Amino acid sequence: MKTLHNKIDGRILKERILTDTTPRTTISFYQYYHLKNVNIFRDHLYQMLDNLDVMGRIYVSSEGINAQISVPDDNMDNFKQALNTITFLDNVRLNKAIEDDGKSFFKLAIKNRHKIVADGLNDDTFDVTNKGIHLKAEDFNRLTDDPETIIVDMRNHYESEVGHFKNAILPDVSTFRDALPIVEEMLKDKKEKNIIMYCTGGIRCEKASAYYKHKGFKNVYQVEGGIIEYTRRAKELGIENKYIGKNFVFDERLGETISEDVISKCHQCGKSCDTHVNCANDACHILFIQCPECASKYEHTCSIKCHDFNKLSPEEKKVQKLTLTFNGSKFSKGRFNPLIQNNIE
Image (cartoon, rainbow, N blue to C red):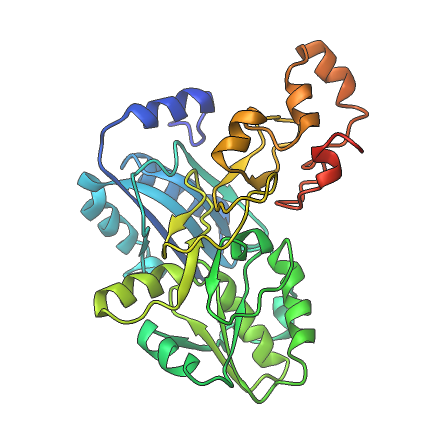
């Protein structure tokens, strides 16, 4: 039987994709659906996509599928035909990347999850199909011309830090689970207002809009296809794009430029910068923003502490890792601590 998991070292696979000249397209899609046998579906999907040389990260659960993938251009038609053989994915909307060199993923990983997006909600307590009204780019622009309309970013702080819609509320949260109650509290006295939510590709707003309608919000909208589809359609129609900065994406690229505005700063020196990286100290690995000068100075680490730690021998690292705390020790994405940077803590 064919292996249904990748067993090749990730570093080898990454080098392979970086030198490969095969034209590829980065795509994301999702669909809420009641899957009865997740394991069987997962294995069937893996075999189907692996045969088409598709790479990416896909989550499947009893509530559906959430996928970010890279497809060889020569296999695109076959890929679409294969998806259409799956009833609930027939003609599913495919969000194509805004900026794309085909190097977004270097292996195929399909994982079973309790939920396709970790939201912390009990779906049995409300109707998840009673979603907010989808807005195309032109409808979004028209509705947001009204100053009374409320725009809410349902993404995490490290996403909205580098780019967001004009005049949007930007909750300071690290997870979607955290955002739901915080946004509800922020808007508790605005339940009669027009409220538009948005995220990267739309999946978080599918659930959030239904939840807020359940909580009594009367006029709930969501950007159809998220930032990705909004940008594509705005360009196609030649209308104003109200998004400023970069769109954070969850693959090797870590971002797509939508406007030339750089609205964020290097976490280490404060210079204008919107380049996300992961700390080169694997014991930290925090996601943070770093300019080229600081990347050179700190050798791609987030702090003096991580820089010095990376110079240690493997044996010394093993011992010191037990007592040291790094920026990313508690997996707090982008929660940069200047004290740790300067080796004070």
